[in-house]
Amino acid sequence: MTLFDGCGVALVTPFGSDGNVNFDALEKLLEHVISGGADALFACGTTGEPSTMSQKERESVISFCVKRAAGKIPVFAGSGCNNTAEAAEFSRRCEKLGADGLLVVTPYYNKCTQNGAYLHYKAVSEAVGIPIVAYNVPTRTSFNLAPQTLLRLAELKNVKAVKEASGDIDQVLEAARLLCGVLDWYIGDDSLTVPAMSIGAKGVISVAANVLPAQMHEITALCRDGKFREAAMLGFKINPFVKKLFCEVNPIPCKKSLELMGIEAGAPRLPLTELEPEHTEQLKAEMQKLGLIR
Image 1 (cartoon, rainbow, N blue to C red):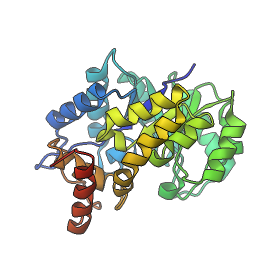
Image 2 (image 1 turned 90 degrees about the vertical axis):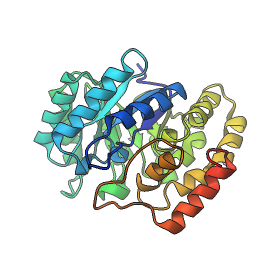
Image 3 (image 1 turned 45 degrees about the horizontal axis):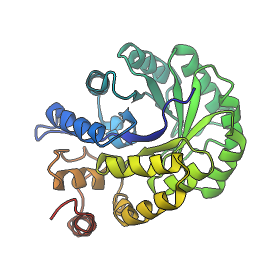
Image 4 (image 1 turned 45 degrees about the vertical axis):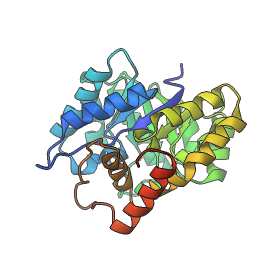
C-alpha cells in the first residue's frame, strides 16, 4: 500500500532567540503547510537539523507534529543515524510517539558496503512495526545506496519506500526501472519532481513545500492526473526560486525565506550560519517575482 501520494514536506525546525525549539512557530508552520495541501510531513529529517538537536528535542518535535497532524496527514519521523543500534532504538521511540512511519537515512561517515547498508536497514526493520522510507542522499552521507540494493531492501518487512535524493538522473532512471511494482519511491530533489513522477515516482519529499506547499501540491496533483505539461509549466515558474533555496546549504535559505514571509524559523544552529547578505537579496528578488513578499 502506498504510504502517500503527492507532496511530503521536509519540515524545518524553528528555533527561538533563546536557541530552543520554538513550538509556537512550529505550529504556525504546520498550519501553513497543512492548509496549503501537503500530503505528508517529515519531521527531523535533514531539513529539520536533527544532527544538532538532542534526542529529547527530536522526540518533542516529532510528538508535537504527530499531535497537530492527527487525523489529517501522516507524519514520518527522521530516525536514522550511522550507529545501527542507536538507529533501531530511536526508531522504536518514534513508533511509541505515534509516528506513522520512519525516514531512515543511510549510514554516514562509517563508509559501509552495500551489504552493510542492507544489514543496517534489516536491523531497524526488525525493531519496529511501522513503515520505513529508506533515504539516499550521497551528497550528505558520502554513501550511495545502489538501485540493486534497493531491491534487497524491498524484501524487508517494513521497508516500503525510498527517498531518492542522489540528484543523478541516470540513477533515478535505473531505480525507476527496477522498482516498478516492487517498492514505492519518492524524489528528494524538488526540481526533478515532474520528470520523476512521469516515470513512476509517487511524489516528492520537498524542501520548497515549507514555503510553497500549495504550488508543490498542485504540481504533484497534476502529475497524478497525467497533466505533465501543465505540471512542468508550474515547475518552470517556481524553479528559479527553488534553485535559490539551495544557494547555500539546506535549510539555511529555506529558513530565511520563511522569515521573509513572516513565519518565524530562527537561525540555523552552528555549524550552519544565517544566509549571506548577497544571497538574501537574490532570494528576495525571486520571492518578489512569485508575489510571496513585496
